[in-house]
Length: 135
Image (cartoon, rainbow, N blue to C red; front, side):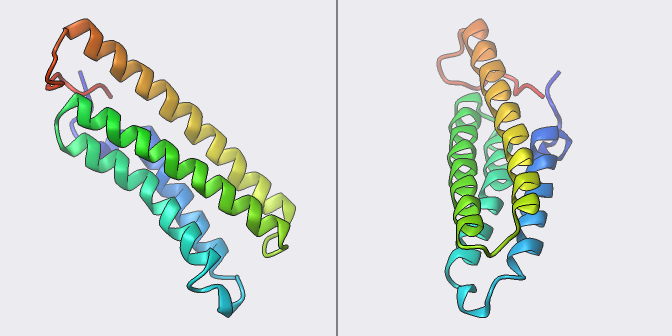
């Protein structure tokens, strides 16, 4: 049986943890970055769990797959912004490495969930994608 609520999905929970960690880290950036890299990091980090939640809430397997793909794209964007922050020395290497390790875990979970959802969609033969969403 699928998750009743997106908040039950471990991939969403990890995404929320990542967003929180990114917000806390980016608050230490220089003030002139408030509307620059800090804002980009925050936006990308929030997009990951937000797209998981939105896709799950729509109730369509195809919508869920589309939003999981968007979440994966946002995660790649987040990783890129984190590497830039490290290159320009806004954050120390151990902290960035820890966050990037969490990003890698999130990426694996998203890939696995997308594969599972695609298999379920194929197995049901539901062309409209209205099947039960997997957990």
